[in-house]
Length: 164
Image (cartoon, rainbow, N blue to C red; front, side, top):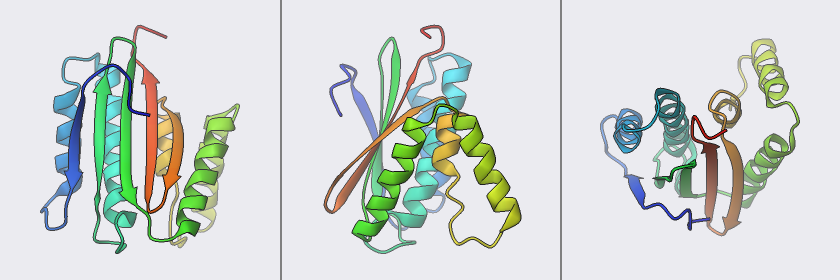
């Protein structure tokens, strides 16, 4: 889903970085520093969530991280593209299913609240699976996903403040 008409700036996660999530957040803040405060906050939060997911689940070796985050901004839309290798096709299918449920929901807030309730009831779950819901609900991003083995790409788009 490149083709937004706006140039992309890309940040790449490689192993050995001391504070990659902080670095990704700073990349987002600098990329959208001229945007409305609401757009800056939403973009920084979304990129932070995506960076955390890349660190935890990206690359061929979980926990080693790997992948790229690209941001483009045009007068109407902010687009974030996240690309990384998946460990298994089952992980890709789970990701696609999660994003399909979020994209098809009439009330993303209800999905978010239900997931929070599930986490409170069972805080020992191995994966919180809250980040994508947070990006959609708190950040106001529309999510889509594609899988071309071994790469998965998530696209998050939101209308810029003042254009809704």
